Length: 469
Image (cartoon, rainbow, N blue to C red):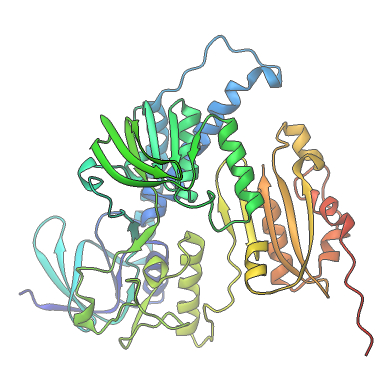
């Protein structure tokens, strides 16, 4: 076995949390090593957030081009070239990887490409991608192991070589008929994009609605959008078996309230959630425990059950968003510098990059009802926002939950074009503990999406009358 190499800081995984921890520690003068299996910078710049949004934007451009006459434009022909879509996406990814490499070089952190496995507390054996092994120990260890797409235990599914988002984002051809298993945010985004490129698309969701964690009116609006764009959505439907091979011909035996039947397509995309990448890397050898779901067990400071070992991002059970992983890094960094930050009560914004977007921050109605929280509701259609009329994008609505007996903002949901920008303004108000009246009386630029907040808050229901003592 190679001689153990000592480092002050050892980071396993170069995703959002890991890379920032490595760059920060190395710049502070600590001898730092980062072990990464494959994706420099993690999933976000390589196979998830950035490439998916690049492809989604190409699909939006295709959709807008198809609406040319609506905007006074005439086209003799319009065709989608998936190979060109891929080239644009790959160019973006290559540029991001180079930025990451430059930052590693500038910081002084050593990037080691290989697979790490713990052989003792805070000590890993690394099987190098280029061959050979190294044994590395760290005074402090940071786990940024990430997550991967879950694959349901359905007979024939594994043999079908179904796609996850990774393979779907690499397609340089257009599926004839794409079947999407799962109605969560990954399935929603990619289903709409592929439909706009010209594929026939069928979505299968076992629950009562797509976007299962959202309010019923949000789910209904998304369903109407998909149906209007020609996407077939099968609700309350389960897949019992799969035959064939994705990319050639697949047949799914499905079951709904009417009984069983068969659904045939050319390609199959599985988008049914994610699981932590924690198996097979010897965490038990390092005294690092997992929770019942297979995520690394951490406390509110993201400390694991092993001394001087922290876990951040997806593997720690944090909400699976890049912006949350970055906040995990900030929590650990600040606490190492004497701070007292925790993961409790974080205000995490959420966005599904369908077109139009679905964005939310704080509570929605479903959560408020489950928690028994009384609220006042204000809601308007996006058509009431003049900016949307200038864009010919009047689909959707926005709504805000206000405390029943105060001016506190409980939550905000927007389904519409530029929804994310409106949500950021509301998030700032919530973080500042500001009353809704501040937004109600603010002077927003006309005509912008944010101006819609004043329209929304123009008719807030009165607080319930106080009971006499």
